[in-house]
Length: 123
Image 1 (cartoon, rainbow, N blue to C red):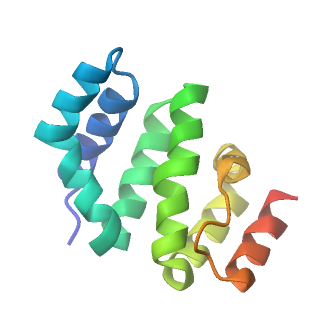
Image 2 (cartoon, rainbow, N blue to C red):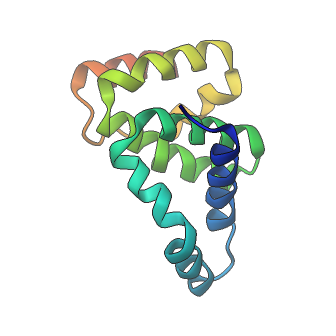
């Protein structure tokens, strides 16, 4: 089961990392905290999805959202395409603000059929 407090904590780490002002600060955050998110990217699609949604809910910063789009969201769709596309489609249908995130996602390792579904959402 996914702990909402853990998701909130991890989402705030993403925000802290993305808004760090120096590379040294980013390195410190990564070494101490962000490395946990980096590991989640490859083994827990449900938890990664929850983190993405929470980061999206916590910020309107266009730079952070652009990195979220081309980073964690793209990673989710590339690593777990068949599992995650349904989540993305559902969220995009009910949340126009989330739908805007899809503009920053590139095909990466997504199979063509998943990429086509994503493209339809972006139209």
